[in-house]
Length: 307
Image (cartoon, rainbow, N blue to C red):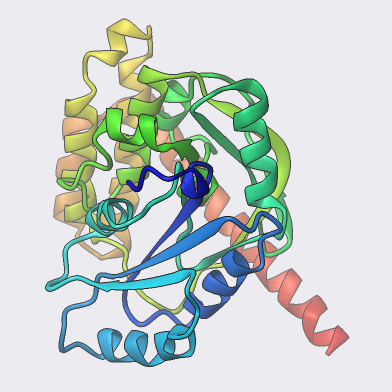
């Protein structure tokens, strides 16, 4: 990091991108339009060099070639989101680090409000609420989200993270062995090392894009195995109900196997983690999915009437 006074309070906004996301320019523009002006934007392209996604991203980034606040970095090979975020930070100069997924966008005062909170309270990490399809999503404001993370409750998302470089360096960045749940893993370590503060405001929008990047059931099972094994000591340390956590996580994997018509694998998993709570969580999950689909159809019908 450069040691000049001009950059002491700079905010580095790290945007990892993959798949030639059509929403990338919206994310970059939202960062450029922040009311907090002392920023730099590091876009890290995690597409394979000769892929369609790389070509699309290179073409899109041409429009920012004269924008001195935007730096474009290309990985020599596809790694993962954790690696892309770490690459962005290692090529940044900011005193503060902020993350923005390429399918999200910041509201104009997000950076300003979060930096003010960090400065006023002299803290290392803060987060905020978000909106999705115009609907506000919040969570219980607390200093420690570990139990909520393990129980898959609504918790702070990566695009809400703003922190000092000091904390990021102390944590040694994102764990690149995680191809998924890297945000959960990182936030757990944040909670183990510092107090988490939250602004009770909706400061960004989660949209999603056309890029399909979801793991299949088997990969998700392995990811769950890794996360719950890596933090196994926390069940006793934090007095968290281990059976409840396992039932919640693996009932979701069970659903993915059923969705893929892998019935044998699904029932082997259920046999391994069976409990009444497992069945209950699976039933609740089905109801939640159905409710979301009904809400989506209703919302779509309303939009069509307006159009």
